[in-house]
Length: 181
Image (cartoon, rainbow, N blue to C red; front, side, top):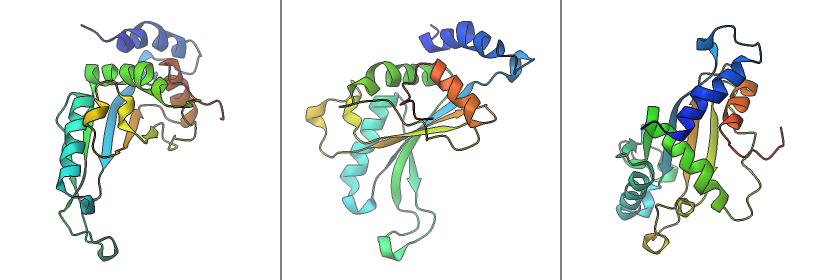
């Protein structure tokens, strides 16, 4: 079964963006390549916090997270090379569209006093990053079982060449931007 956002992209968004006369070829129309979900955890908090982060990220994304390891030692942070510093999941194809649909339609509206996500999260190459302070906004997470307040970073990687094209693409998917552009 094809996800709702993928059908929307193939049916409406691609033709609308191509109708702007910026893309003479249908293959030049920007699209979302992948979504990377990352949770950073300080090694000083203990192994149980990292295990909880892995478990929660697996519940949210439906995929087993990969561990991030420190590349260099930093004495001031009591960090040694090879220590686990977090976990990440890369989502592609149908799973990516399903996650974006749950993020836009279910999770973001559950944020208290939500006025839209920042429009300043673009990196200049067409990629968008958003930070979420509390993972309990996702309906899959049971609030009673969460022991530690954890956050996550979500990066949406697109094939757009600049920020304006990426903003237009992600806005067409229904991302609620704050309007400060």
